[in-house]
Length: 352
Image (cartoon, rainbow, N blue to C red; front, side, top):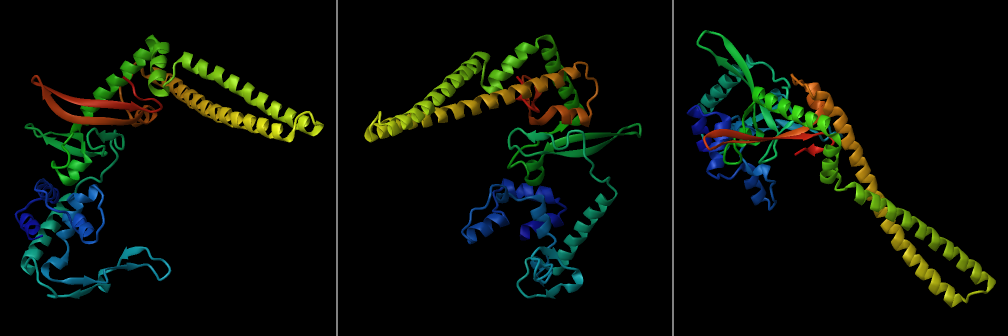
């Protein structure tokens, strides 16, 4: 904890402190608590984060002060934890050995306050074009949006929006990497991808639907036809067995068959009927799912073909078409920068 305060006194930001601790494998407070209490912490809790560091750098306990009654419940009936007003707090000064001096702690608070004041004039975060739709291809964490301002030599300014991995933002490179992409670049990629798929559907919809059926529904037309034929056979056989069992009851009461023969035959019929009925239910469920997926595919082709000549991308179009987009890390291959972007559509997922 002493080192965290030293880094802050040197002007290091919360996120940079968290990243440094993660790089060096320093045990996080959550992991330490879990080990002491014999519990397994979740993977995310094993990391130092921006929020963890910020909490430590605002906590008076590190200057030797014990703070009590700062939290509590709403009432004896409502046990929801709330933060109490500062007037109700109870402070015990110099109750235990301090990690930092009172002067150092106060200096850190001034640094914290100055950082907060610098952010006051910033615009409130607003949803960006791809907010909630981007996922890191490696750690599967949602990407965060970031607004940037470029100051040009002629005195003008230009604003950009970029996205980066949320895990990287909270805990640094030791956990995941940057995965940064600019909104303008991503927009061009997504427009081109949508137009490509729309063109494929327009040129040969049947081929696209057939390919998606094999990939998504795991069914082709012949397999579906065979399953339906098998369903018809099973239904007929189940009905025959039920009719045979009913006839056996008549024969039993008329004396045409003995009690022992009746028991053997009805038991045999029922065993077969249950097996056939179970197989029938499984096939019906399988065909129903395949038909639902086929309907989803047809729904997607009807929607995507509308965007053959798409020029501009807005949130309405994104919500109608896209479930999520996976963003890979930028790499350099043969001197060329590359970044793998995978668009997962609603109804059909990734279309390759």
